[in-house]
Length: 275
Length: 358
Image (cartoon, rainbow over all chains, first blue to last red; front, side, top):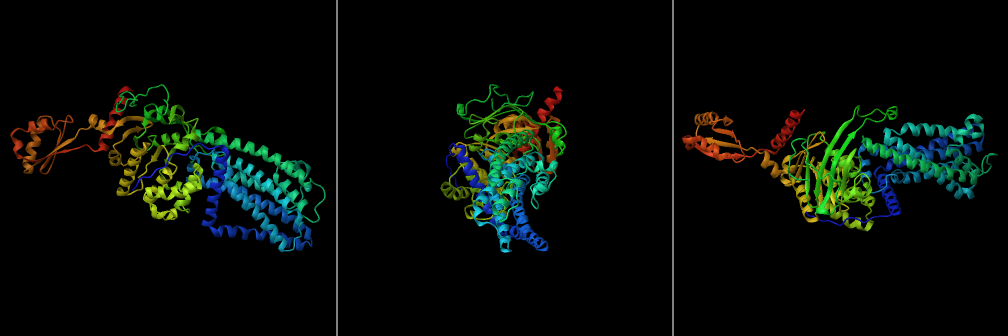
């Protein structure tokens, strides 16, 4: 064996650390996509069926608008679900597998890890939602093509909001080793309260206020207003939804990162980071 | 810290007690003073959602003092549960000390953990820490980027560091396809990748065959000598630790039983045995009887008689005690005490001292 060596690396700014950390995790995600190529294909094949379900339901009810209405709600929910479950699954896998420790001993702020870990799947979640809408269009759904750029902006802000919630779920995993209960509870609640298949105006007032705390409801409502040729009456304007989502992101992401940092510190003190 | 001195009362080498000195003072890189770690059960509110892993407090480290200088290897030896891994985890920031101080290159292990992780290369004991479906290059690339190495630097550095650990031909091999020894070398490569000043190696040769382990340790020794790295290494293979010619920290139940070099440990504790080979079993029995009569502990096995020496240099005294029967001796051989027995003796002595005190 020969001996080669290089000097230690100098100090880095927080910005550089953030960029390099995100780049490193995205690269490894790309490697994983290549490792299991069939998984990606099957993930996209799976979402064809809910689209078909809503298409046939719309046909059965002789309501083409209902199909588009449900298609948009289901696409947003599926895209967000992909981003949300990916973070918790991956963090839990890393914790159980033993790779989390090797990530934690790298010289990067720990709060960056859940965000960097989920960047790629946030992107694939967006692609999945677009794929569902595109497939729906192939089946005859009519959407307003001019509004697509703004619809993507709304979706992107919604994805950030989901990541903020994901950070809270990550804290749960760090301390309690299981994230599914939180994500399952949130996902099922969001499907109902976010108005995936119906407008939240049909909810009784005493429960409707909870919908206003779920980012799904703002994104779904804005997407319907933007993309449907004949959107349902009432509800917030897309710009108002964006404004509320931005506030939601800032507040929940800040709280999520603080809680994640505190959870890591507690787990570190208790010695339960990897057990 | 006074190296090589056993403190009979607590079995812990006395520290300076004045906190960690600057990194470069006397070349001290790792300085621990009175480091204690007590694992507590999880708080009651957490048990609603997850069962606690321990029911009462566990003292994993109890007032550990340690100094490792640049260019030094310190081997940490101890049974399971001695506190070796906890010590390593505190140094790399995966857990915190309950009390005491610790510094690496002048950086506080509790407060400056992120900066410490920049200068410490950690090799965990388990293969699980590798991404099994990724290649060696992909594994190293991830960690290199997290360490802040540029893509260009990594392009040159990854083949170089893999060549260092004899994996030059496996740059693009998927990790799952490597043998246990190769995976160990890849973990070492990952620790070496950014050019750390401190190496923390948790049982680096645990899954490696003896010849590969020899090469691995030679490499570590050469790096230490050339780059003046400070190295902490834990191993259950005592012959390897002896071969490293390093400092040794003997731990048991979180306490330091001995800290110093192994030569001094031998000097203080070794009681070699003398083997006398005689003409016949009858002669061996006669010689043994003579020695026993003079208070020498002996065992007879065929034509050979083995006797325990009262002092380290007591071979002459035994031979002199033989008298005329010495003519029947064909061969004389001194059998050194295995390191395992030496360590057991040091542990036993401390246990007796503690038992006597309580």
